[in-house]
Amino acid sequence: MDDGCTDDVSSDAFVMRVAPSLDAFSSAEWANLAGASRENQATPYNPFVSHAFLSSLEDSGTTSPQTGWQPQHLRLENSDGALLGAVPCYLKSHSQGEYVFDHGWADAFERAGGRYYPKLQVSVPFTPATGPRLLVAPGRDAGAVRQALGAGLKTLCERLGVSSAHVTFAPETEAAALEEIGYLRRTDQQFHFFNRGYAGFEDFLASLASRKRKAIRRERREALGEDITIERLTGADLTEAVWDDFFRFYMDTGGRKWGRPYLNRRFYSLIGERMADDIMLVMARRNGRNVAGAINFIGGDTLYGRNWGCIEDHPFLHFEVCYYQAIEFAIEKGLKVVEAGAQGQHKLSRGYVPVTTHSAHFITHPGLRDAVADYLVRERAEVAQIGAYLEEHAPFRKARD
Image (tube, rainbow, N blue to C red):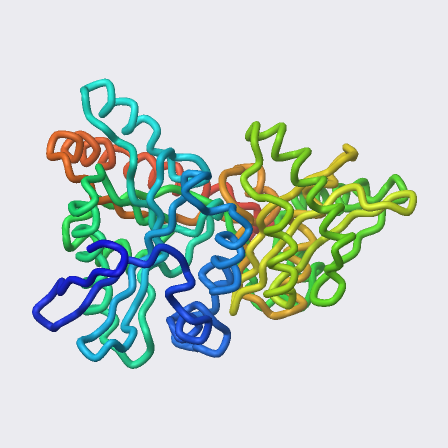
């Protein structure tokens, strides 16, 4: 299964191709896959699996062999050449930018004499947001297509001679389907806000315990206490000058947090050209200039918070720009969920509740597979235990409050 080659991977005459870039799919073809466009209602639109987002990563050089993210997308066709499904997949030479950490697995395998890299990564690069990974064309048997895609990924692993394939931030249904064909299931935790039909931000606050409600009001007030104003920008508001400011914030914060930020300036210009109406940028201004910002992507029923940055430090400004503005926007637009990215138990007291995330892992070496499987049993139990504890400490009003 190489570039330009085909293989049958099931008795149903499925044909799997490996595409070295998203150019192997027309934008219309890709948009027809579940979750990849607003027009396809079978699955709520996820902007991160859209052709616009993924092609912007490639065309900006952010995902490339040089950055250790070599596209190896799977394209599943029937015997007549009709597209049945696809997988956004990358050949990785490291484990950076994934947010589901396997560095320990790599270290242990290599200390034992194995070669962990390269590996296959099925994900949206640099994006810890759950969304479809086994993309299915409408009118097809979703179960059969997902099984074929999962089997094709295993075959590609073996053909390339790589150690493993990792399907991260997948819907639980996809992770379960992959587990049925030999993948190992992994769980983790994030914090999401759920819009329970709130009429406005004050209605949301009324659902919280009084102490939490007062704390949020104080944080919002103090965040704007130094003549700071907040703007929400989308569509035509996203000018190159705005992107210049935001990229400066991203580089400053990303450089301090990661050492080397993942995204480049051209990437932001491309998404501004290709999907501006799917972006909501929150910018904080003081003394006539932007001093902080956060980028959000608007899905079919979810607002996805991604990168934040600042060039001035102000108390509680991060919470206002990243969390409270996102909640307010989601309520105004009738969106059901806000996903605010990875990690951060501090989100709990601000109305975000713990949610389990899922991934699936195929490991070729029997010894490494057994060791990882044993580890994952204990890790899943710990994740569940922590989740139950955090649920008990959710900030919402009790009956007596």
